[in-house]
Image (cartoon, rainbow, N blue to C red; front, side, top):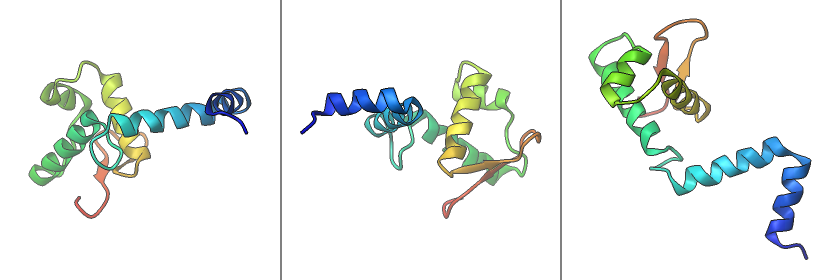
Length: 106
């Protein structure tokens, strides 16, 4: 019978992309707030929901940065990409401010 470290080593050697995804999932579970979202992702999603109630126009990256005290556009992009991958939002390619909130609570 194999121990967990040899299984992990084999996984890393045979499929590094899968190993990275498993690692990301483990980190998300240990540092997440409900439904696999990190605290920052949850705050951005709530912010987007609030803004959607106020206006039909989604906030720009700069507005998200300023209102949530996020340091860079790349961080906003990473968070929005993570929310999209988790099925919380949908963005249209090459359309600025085209963000739809998905799910029952949208």
